[in-house]
Length: 271
Image 1 (cartoon, helix red, strand yellow):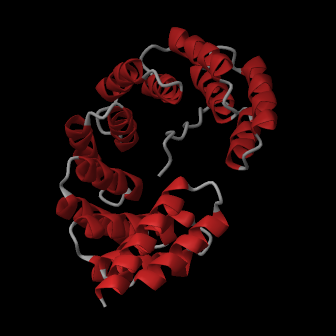
Image 2: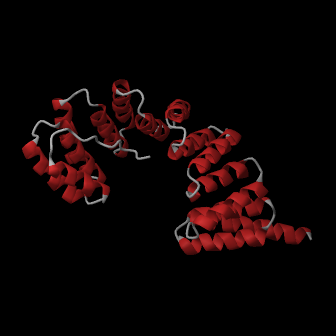
Image 3: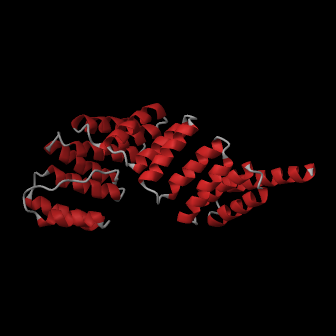
């Protein structure tokens, strides 16, 4: 499910608007903007077209331009929840989290059954380390859209940041059930299990992640931690080497490699 809610079509026939939607789906944001601007010649007071242009600029990370169009959209129709969601997304990207939260609140007030708005608010609160509040948003998302895998995953992250690793693990498993082809969810399971000292089980989830993605240094770091917990130091070292080969600037992998070597020396001395 997208962070941005899809814009609905108007009843007025406007081929430029439809072209804009097509270009947005294809990721051709410059072409989308041109089509939407042409669409405004037919529907100059259609706030949704201004909103679409705002989203196109948002995708291009041109936030100042995006805000201008969302502002125009809100002046035309202050009751359109999507405009407030759009502004909230931009403010969140700019790091203005408290302001972003207020805009998401307004979007929710206007459309309280939209799971995307609760998800976006949850992300904003999570960025502020307000994990308990973000959980309330993710719980609401789960009520409205039980298979919203990104929300289930982020709920797990919030729980993990609160030290509730078993609950986090359960939420990650729900994310996997909703979308089984995202390797990040498996790695997050490993992270939660490692934090609970369940290294054997954590290793299994790591191996599942590797079946989906073999070029992630993040996977190998987590696998190294699982292996280290099981005192499989040579295998852990090899994981660190693979992580560094993928990302030579990964300081965590380099530090972990040093730690594992020290553990390995201690083991040899004991023998």
